[in-house]
Amino acid sequence: MSLLVVGSVAFDALESPYGKVDRTLGGAATYFSVAASFFTHVNLVAVVGDDFKSFFWAGKYSENLNERITLATELNVFADFKPRLPEKYRASKYVFLANIAPGLQHDVLKQVTKRPKIAALDTMNYWIERTNEDLRETLRHVDILMINDIETRQLSNEHNLLRAARHIFKMGPSTLVVKRGEYGAMMVDARGVFCVPAFPLEEPHDPTGAGDCFAGGFMGYLASAGNKSDGSLRRAMVYGSVLGSFCVEKFGLERLRTLKRNEIHARARHFAKLTQFKL
Amino acid sequence: MSLLVVGSVAFDALESPYGKVDRTLGGAATYFSVAASFFTHVNLVAVVGDDFKSFFWAGKYSENLNERITLATELNVFADFKPRLPEKYRASKYVFLANIAPGLQHDVLKQVTKRPKIAALDTMNYWIERTNEDLRETLRHVDILMINDIETRQLSNEHNLLRAARHIFKMGPSTLVVKRGEYGAMMVDARGVFCVPAFPLEEPHDPTGAGDCFAGGFMGYLASAGNKSDGSLRRAMVYGSVLGSFCVEKFGLERLRTLKRNEIHARARHFAKLTQFKL
Image 1 (cartoon, rainbow over the protein chains, first blue to last red):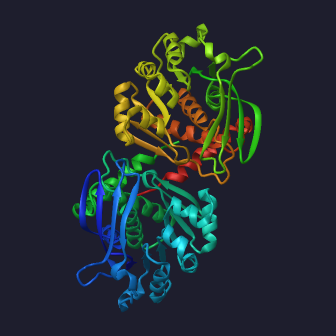
Image 2: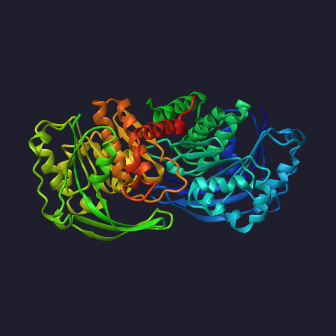
Image 3: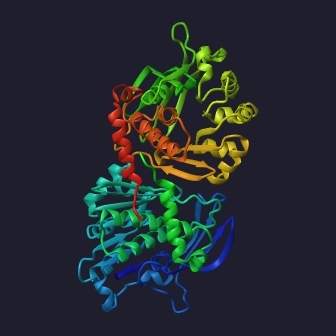
C-alpha cells in the first residue's frame, strides 16, 4: 500500500562517546523512509538545497547517551519549503507527517485527495510551544499521534499518561503512541493500552533517528498489512521497536544500510521472548 | 512452601496529594507479608517496641508522585535488632531479606539450616554507600537481587543495565530484578531478559510500599509454585507487578486489606492483554 512521508532530509553532525561525524545524511524523513522501506514502497517529500545544503542539525550525546545537547540547527532551504505533492502521491492511503512545522504538515495532508486510511503525526516541544494553534488544527485531521513522554505531558498538560491520552483523543487522534526511549513504547486507544519494552542492548552507539526509525517500522508495517486491526497495530509497535533498536546499534544510518529482512523478523521473535508469559 | 521474610515493621507518616496520615502501619516486611499472604503462608521476623514504638518513617510525595522527600527516619528499637529465628523458621525454603542492614540480612540467612531454594535480597543507596563490604559478603549467598534502577547503577558502577547485570552476577546472584516504578520491572538472568510494564493507572494515590508488594507477590508466587523454572519466574514477575499496582491504588495498606484473590487473577490476565502480540 502507498506510504507517503513528509519531513526533513538533512545533514547531521553527531558526536557520542562512540564516534564523531561532521556531515552525515540524516533527517527524520530519511530515517523514516529507510526503516519503512523494509516493509513497503515509500514516497518521500522533502527539500534539499542546490548544493544539498539542506536542513542542518548538530548534536552531542553524554557518556551514557541519555542526554543530548543540540549544538546547531540551521533551517536553510527548509525555511521556504512549500511542498506540492506529485499527482500520484495524492492518493496515498498511509501518510506520515514527520516532525516539521504543523502548518506544513497540514498543507501536505490537504493535498491528499481522499482521507487516508491512517495519517500519523510526530511533533516536538518547539511546535507545541510556538505554533500551538496550527498544531491543534492539524491534529483534528490525524489518526495517530506519535510523540515522546515529555511531549505528551506538555501537549496535554497532564502528567499521567492515561489522562493525557484521553485529553489528546479530544483533539482528534484516536490512537496515541508514546515513545519512551530506553523504556520502550506505549500505545493507547479506545481498546486499551499496549506496551513494548525497548530491546536491551549492551552497547547502544547513537540514539539519533531511533524515534524516526520506530515510526518508519510502525507505518511501514501497517501499510504492508493494509489494515488497522488491534493485532496489526500491536505488530506495528513491535516492528517499530525492532527498527528503532537496530538504528541505535551503530552510528547514524550505518546499521540500517546492512540490515536484512531476516534479521528484522528474528528480532521481532526476540521481542516476543522478552515479554511473553503463560498464566 | 515456607516463605520467610526479615525486615522492618514500622510506623509511617505519609503525605501525598491524595491524603495525609500521621501514624499508619508500614515497613517493608509488612507490605511484603501482606502481598505474599495471597499466595502462601508467610513467616515474618521483625522487631516492634514495647509501645509498638518501632522504626518510624515519614515521607512526602510531590504532586505527580514521582518525587519523594524523606522527612524523618527513626531507627528506635531497630537499632539493636538481633533476630534469632524460631526453630521451625530455620527450614525455610524461600527467604526474602527486605531492605535492612546487610549484616543483619546475613545473620538471618546463616540461621537458615539448609541453603534455601531461593534467597532474595533488597537493599538501597544507604547500605550500598555505607556498608558496601557487608553487602558484598551477603550477596555471595543470595540468588535474586531485587532493587531499583538507580541502585543497580550505583552498585555495579555501570549505566547500562545489561552490563550492570553481568557485573552483579559476579557478586553472587544469578538473577537480577530491576524495579523501575512507572516503567515496570525487568528480570535478567543467564537465559536472557524479561520485561513487564507497570499497570497503567489513571490515579495512583500513594507509591509507598509498591516495591515491597512487588517483592511479596513475586516471592509469594514462587513459594506457592515450588520451583524456579523460567515460566515460574516470569509469572512471579507478573504477580509482583499485580500486587505492586494494587498497592498504589490507595493510601498505605488500605487497598490490600480489601483485595480478593479473584481480583489478583483478573489483573494478571489484564497484564497479558497489555503485552501480548502474535507475529
